[in-house]
Length: 500
Image (tube, rainbow, N blue to C red; front, side):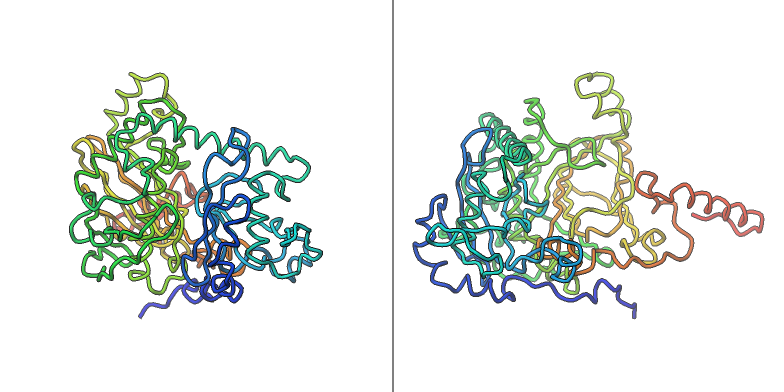
């Protein structure tokens, strides 16, 4: 029996239903009555689950210099972020907050990190019921004081905009610009239920029959506010194929949805509106959250990805509470097509100068990754090649498999599972990628309360596999290639053969 990696022996995360103050808040009368709704800036509030309260806020200027042009769901619950008291005393950082406060959707704001947590400055000052500032930062907060502070942050009058900080203004403008692009595109979108759908619901016709029951909503569901029924229990293990340890495939999207998404992406690209490329590796594609598809992708996460990961990765702490995502499409095209596009286009030349046929070996900035082939023109080759998991001894020496792509079929794997896209030899292919993330884990790992994913990194042993190395992502690439070359020469002289 294999010895488990140390990361599987980490202490458990403190989730909202395990956190005393969070449970107190969700059980309190304040979370159930009209007290919160009467606060300036509060549109609605609800208890999503034991220990987790959601407040829908709208406050601030409805202009390019503020956050008031949309509603912002705020989640209150779970262990706060920050250093332990000992570390904070030693180095002067912010001590761990009394409770986690984070936005449920992507937001650019001074004092909010990339998992959308409000940082330690959130607890510097807060208002009491009578409008006076609390005399002590150590005083236990209330739902009322937390909500009032969050409203101040949106209005630019809180600690995150002390003395008219230009960083707050720059972040507010950035958020406003992203929203402007989404709204501008909404006027020419192709499918209204896919882009900025009023309900944020996934049409069951987009999903293969075996998984459709997950996306049948009750009349009381309102995904836009987070109030949604619990999906029916499904035996996911009977619906997936295990192609290698930790790597699963299953049918997900119908041809209808694949075509809808491809056409929507093409329509957005044709507008020439500003768009963000998926990451530093992919030169083609875009972030679908940025063009109005964030509600749909959130439903895909909540109703499928999070529950299926709980079942398929029962020993993984990092996938135990997936609650936010970075979702995007990537596109690969054969080199002959790439050259034609590059020669014909000058406006997007920077997107076409690099090889867009494949993708070098890497691991994702996610806890779990869903990769779904949408198809496009008939394509050949270009499979997804897997090696080992980051942090393991064989992470670059254990080539496991080459998984082919089929339209509408999903591949699910851990983010730390090293993989790369082989070059496509003919045609073009588009894939939807959802990087699923766990805010509780990220908030705890950022301050050393739990170990980072893939750590402690074990010392690699054995001969590394050339196909598992990455010229773009491995600092020791040249060194390892020389080592492999020397070993090959030694083997040839000894009549053993070459290293693969």
